[in-house]
Image (cartoon, rainbow, N blue to C red; front, side):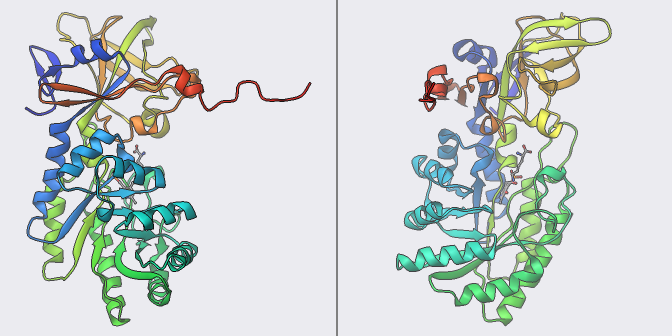
Amino acid sequence: MDFFNRHDGELYAESVPVSRIAAAHGTPCYIYSRATLERHFHAYDQALEGMPHRICYAVKANSNLAVLNVLARLGAGFDIVSGGELERVIRAGGDPGATVFSGVGKQRWEIERALEAGVRCFNVESDFELAMISEVASERGRIAPVSVRVNPDVDAGTHPYISTGLKENKFGVEIEQARVLYRRAAEMPGLEVVGADCHIGSQLQSLDPLMDALERMLALIDALAEDGIAIQHLDMGGGLGVPYGDEQPPSPGAYGEALKERLAGRDLELLLEPGRSIAANAGIMVTRVEGIKGGDEHRFAIVDGAMNDLIRPSLYSAWQRIEAVADPSGIQPGVYDVVGPVCETGDFLGKQRELAIEAGDLLAVRSAGAYGFVMSSNYNTRNRPPEILVDGADVHLVRRRETLEEQLAPEIPLPELGS
Ligand SMILES: Cc1ncc(COP(=O)(O)O)c(C=O)c1O
Ligand SMILES: N[C@@H](CCCC[NH3+])C(=O)O
């Protein structure tokens, strides 16, 4: 059985009532479905069957060790953006040799560690990064496999904060300059040019910008071949959107088919770095209604989850479906702003939502499996929520609720300030 379904009106996570999980682990909490993570991964993998490929899940979307382990078991590779993410992949049983390292500001220690762990490829975003990788590899007598992350200058048509493939964005190397940088890379010590890489943005609603970027990347690869630089893999990044509401983004299957068709006959391995489309709809955040207030004009459902637990609504004005966990029939629906306890006007999970709820009821915020817990914080000295993985009828607590002691541990309470 797949993730969220209603039985007798009540919301279930796979075959477990969400209310039972909330009773055991408290609220707010994140709940993930193993079956959904696996279904999403297989959708990509199956669509690319018949061509050499590797799905490198973008760890930033949801880096819980159990989630990474579920994907590693399926043969996923990983896309990381920090030394910390690399350690997570290793601890989760992932293969560094199937891991690509992206990111605009890689630090020396991170490059050293990635080289030592044997990552599959560095997706290089600048000339100074290339120089640093060459230096670190040469010092150690190693050869670092590299791709240049190209900024293909296509408009992904997404929220400006999550668009990455335009000249005005900080990511990658301008496509006009990429060829020059590749030539330089091919001559630098300690480097082996193995791939070409791009990522144009997130929550994309159409294949057009992705296929546009693909054309530009293929033209670059052909130009590089003329320069005697043979590209072995093409990494098209992540970016496919998910239906938070009524959106109808292209499916991983359709995207995979389109890529396979365009790349037929080319001697290239294809890498993809999906994050959101694998994890978002494999998770919910569950929160409890503390009370209801307001008058006839404006009513608020005050809940125990807040912007520190799930920041997407506040940060991007993102809309995520909110629904009552219990059977709502029999309760008079009302229209509410669903708001948390944090002292910010912008602390909301949803605005003007029709809900049949009373104080004490549970609410599920859907599509919270990606960019949810990973973006949580301790703002207002709130402890970060627990994460739970459901696997059929089994419920695994995979990260417990943080305690105040853990939050305060790095602080030096009484510094020697002098009198
Ligand atoms: C380099 C890179 N790869 C992959 C991703 C994952 O993107 P998404 O979650 O939209 O699939 C991102 C985030 O946008 C990224 O910056
Ligand atoms: N955090 C963003 C996506 C960022 C993509 C990472 N480059 C979101 O929640 O939509």
